[in-house]
View 1 (tube, rainbow, N blue to C red):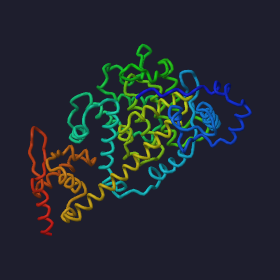
View 2 (view 1 turned 45 degrees about the vertical axis):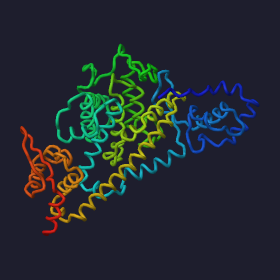
View 3 (view 1 turned 30 degrees about the horizontal axis):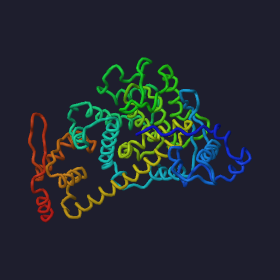
Length: 447
């Protein structure tokens, strides 16, 4: 990723505007608004489009900037110079917010697997694992998804820093769900950071505290290009208090849609970079807290990081576009709304695939009706992964149930001849029998 080209200075363009102020106003009153072809373009992208009304690129940019500035809404977040951050609501934003309102909150219609308390925990745990893995991978964790899932499901201790990052993120996301009704405080932010960074920092004393003045933290690349240098350490206490006031709806005076507020909270923590490490993971955790706090309950099951991870450079540019263009948060907001929209769509697609898969198995193997929903899910998984090993702990974690219930499920499957068990040290391992599908068919035919 490279630093985007900073937009030209509006005042300098105005001084050199062809035809003077009269021509400027003549074009301005007929200008089409802050978008270009339905897109909210940064100068770095605008340069590759054709200007309208015989304007130079600089004059075209000036027209767009004046249209945008007339619609700006200020928020309490200030940059290092004391200037406020702003955003505006354009047509794509209204439409995307409406879709999110419909698709992630209120009385949204979802398949029974999500709404049924007996089965929703399986989807909840899957989403937590997915978010934990991809959010950690964004910050450099190198463990594969398969290995990370095995670690979390079996409950084995992490073996390196990457696995520890992922486990920490998983535990943090579970804690966020519990904090959804709480107001945000600096103490809670510190607790989240402490949980996220436990045993992963080179300096253990940096866990759960502000970075110090002698700890210069910058965001850059491997070539030592600095993309962002956060505010000085002596401002962090007051800035976090202001951030919590914003998160809790105390500021500003005007209404901000809860999704917009959640996105800005994500940006705010990342911009201030109050910690020595773990800022990105903490920022995304606060976004989840805010969405759940405002009643968008479907975000228990949604992973935004898996979308971000597919194109991380876009994530970085969304921050840089905002900082290089007069603190215009609209770039980051639109980017984030698109991420949310894709994440919701992927959840719906995932549930549809899982539903169709389960129906296919149940249709062919009527015997599955004799098992509970957890055993049916395990049998369905075993049919697709015949070499998979299961433990009581992995089954317990997958369905968020107590140990004894998980134990009963697995030994019942063994008693029916569908799984084999062996004990290594203190752990029971269960594997599907080699002819699992044939066994199920015979059991079905015997009904």
